[in-house]
Image 1 (cartoon, rainbow over the protein chains, first blue to last red):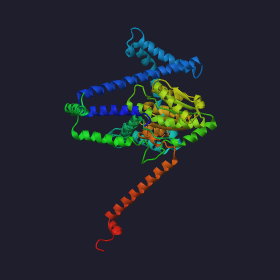
Image 2: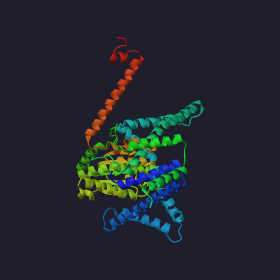
Image 3: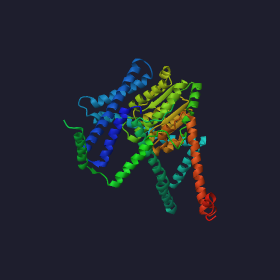
Image 4: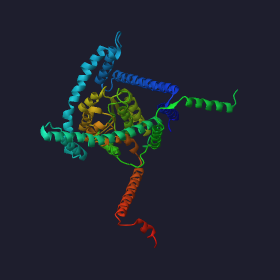
Length: 205
Length: 282
């Protein structure tokens, strides 16, 4: 164990939270609440430190004339604009109309424009995967084509049959694959989180 | 002053009082199930290296080849840690994937430090920048190549998922290899296609079940749980991997023999008891 104090702290906190999860006790509940609040505070402090570190680094890059000056100016201007909009006298913080305008009029449209490229990019990715002969990708594109046929807006008995088949596909094979993935991800998420907190890692050298 | 026996007595009484004032949140059965699951998880936690499975789903054993190509062509290698970061306003599952990508970054950072190939790490979160910087720094310290640290860069791609996708789609650099492991959410196809278009080879992975198709189209193989498992499969010693693979094949052979024997016995073709111990009455 490389960090025995941190690991011991994690074990103690973990046991307390587990006990609070299983047992109803007023004092235990208060201690658990206190611990959760402390974790939220630490996370908020870390986020603030991260932003400060970014601003410091970009500012230093600009001062020492190294790296990408345009990028540095953009980052510092963006941070400054948001800070001024949210923290100027009389502002309402994150709920201020100037902050909402910066997000709604600048960030969201830019994001939506990029998101609009998704259709074209997906087709391009499919074409490239088929050209490279990737077996998994070919199977994926074939399944997508089959689903496309099932979802055709046809009327009559054929349309009903296709709709039922599409519903069955979604509920049974796709549902099974998704649940399997989710189960595997959930188990390994718990394992990885515990290993990270306890400082247990694989030796890779 | 109380004697040690009195102190112990008071402590036991105190614990007894606490227990007396408590009640189980669930029934006895579910409580035991929760504790049982935790015991199994603890057993797995204590073994960070995969025991029964040895694979190279992400192709990380070929990092050395990628470094050789990069050194030969004078380009760099890119590692994208996804766009969830560690402190961004997203869910825990997405943020944990950033942590899961760090062992892979560490692996690539050591290889790049040894080879003298510049490393470019893309992050969408200031805190992840610091962590990634420390990981790259550690790679140079481990390999005693601190003089090469200045050639590698940690790039903050901007706030938000679209910014990360936009950067990789518009970049003019052509790295020899790119590794993209982490949470990419809806912009996964944009990010991975951007990297795939510019890089020589791409290894992609995400634990987002909804983005499996994007990873498959990008030619990556770290899907779902594999994105977390990759850290356990990073082994420097090829002998260890070979031993696990050999043991797996022996286990498969044993299982196949048991299944075949059971089927033959059920069909009345053979009598294992007679073969092994002789027929009864002989």
